[in-house]
Amino acid sequence: MLFCEDFESLPPGEAGSPHWETDTENGTLTVEPHPGGHRAGRHLRVRTEGNGKAFLAVTDLAPPGNSFWGRVRLRVAAFPTAPDWAHWTMVEATGRGPGYIRPLGGQYVPSAGKNLWGVGSDGGPTGDWTAWRESAPARAGIWQCVEWRMDASDNRIEVWFDGEPQPDLTVDTRNHGGAGVDFVFPEFDTVKFGWQLYQGDPSPSGYDVRMDDLALGTERVGCER
Image (cartoon, rainbow, N blue to C red; front, side, top):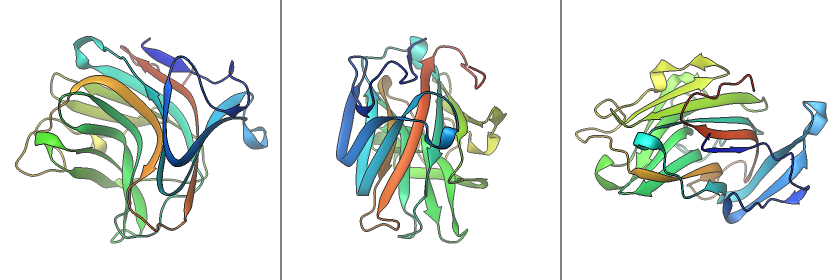
């Protein structure tokens, strides 16, 4: 295992640990009991205002072959409904080399009238795009187990929701939302879990995300443990 955090050993209140860092702007990270008796134990609450950000950052990673698996259990209270094309990120992987790889994020798509999951990247030769899919609507108010795989052999990202593969969200070197450029991984050393919205004056004006059972590994972790 490259990293795991279930928040059980952390005291309630402002989140902090020697095993990870925080990256916030107009946002907070707190450790809280699970609400409404959904499950026992504690989780991470991510709260932002406007187009703020709040991330738990796992640094100094060195995944073998620049490839790894990830997992997070999450619940989003509400996704943006304005402005049109509002773009948000929940997991971001960066490292030496250009680009911010976002295996878990999405966008409010006005033509569909809903938020859709997508895989995207910003910066460098990879360009700026979000490969959202109408077959993958984002659902608010429920807990989901989300997994992803980063495979450097073909710069491939694959996604699973509650153990079910989402092949429409798969991207690789040549098959992605950008046109005329290759999708290229940096040499990963950091993975961030949390929330960031990139457009100002959104609706709703604040965002509440809950996360638990964060994991990064060289093999699939799964949702059973």
